[in-house]
Image (cartoon, helix red, strand yellow):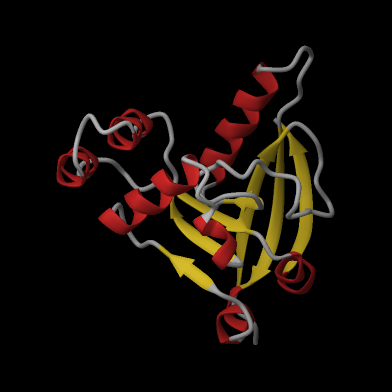
Length: 167
């Protein structure tokens, strides 16, 4: 029996067939299709995106992901950050600077540099604080989950569209 999880993608359109090559490369985890386990986070992102468009409509897309089979499949390079760490901070900083560390991986999972942590990440990227000072600021922040899939084969093999809901 497969161990599937539900993942969400907040958007302004229904996304039945996700693509990995349409995202911007300077994002936290690079170019790819972003998802989260956190339904409220995806809803909030959809509403944010909709508010930026004239007559924008927020849509929550839901998917099942066959996590058990994916984890057992050793054909993909996976990077998982369990918490805010120096490694996470350096990885995001490098990507935001255009170094494209994400190109080494097919699946990247970890915390999102959302509104509550972005000022700390930016201060670190800009050299105003060092890594330890950044981590000291992040220690009390809740880790908001995100996954970036940059290999289309993972989507095609393990991700299945469930439904979309207009918010």
